[in-house]
Image (tube, rainbow, N blue to C red; front, side, top):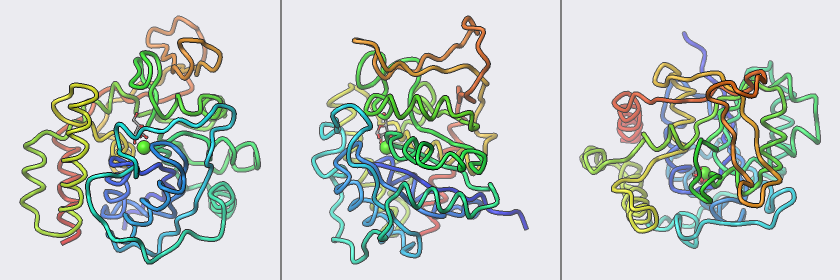
Length: 311
Ligand code: RIB
Ligand code: CA
């Protein structure tokens, strides 16, 4: 039998983070080893509470949730209430979780799981990279033990500033540590994730699936669609973070190219920009596998199958 791909999702739920977790928990090719949380879309207290709610509705309370960094490494924290609401996951009404985070910091859990492993764990950060950078600095011995890092972040344009995508902008110093670590990285930037638009047709297909998790995902998309219409003028919301898990399930759903990517940490206007060297003008060695195109039908089929799994 094909071995499952072991992943740790480091996230800031977050509507699309929640869908990423639910996709991972439902797919037979994934072994969701742990969930760690970080400040991003909302304060870490809120993103942790949201992660616990998602774990509970998914029925995966055996998956440890560890709370992580509440502040970026250097900069003052920024959150995204205009996109995700004050709770970080506004819209659906879920009961308060009956479970708690484990009594271990996210950074320590990531280090421990990696050192205990055979080097077969993929890190899937879908929020700011603060925890990942802290783990690398706290214990460099984890670097050869990380199979791959599949990041949602960056791109050739921004959504928080004209230059910077939110996850990178919140902690560009952490992103620089990760992008320069030498660990194999696949980047799901905005150029890719803006192809993963949850159209009304997708929502209608999900609405036909009668179970509480499908209903929850449907409600997430209703809220997310409205904020993307209000804030960005998008017809439909991009489910950014689920692209990372979809890649771990089936990389053939994506076309990628090895490119050099630098992270700007000094720019007055370009702080948090990922400089994707599409034409190789820097002559620097490629350090990132950049996802460029998405097979939409295969992607959405994965999401629909995940919704059906919870029936
Ligand atoms: O820019 C989009 C990213 O920022 C997504 O991961 C979203 O959840 C927010 O964290
Ligand atoms: Ca996120």
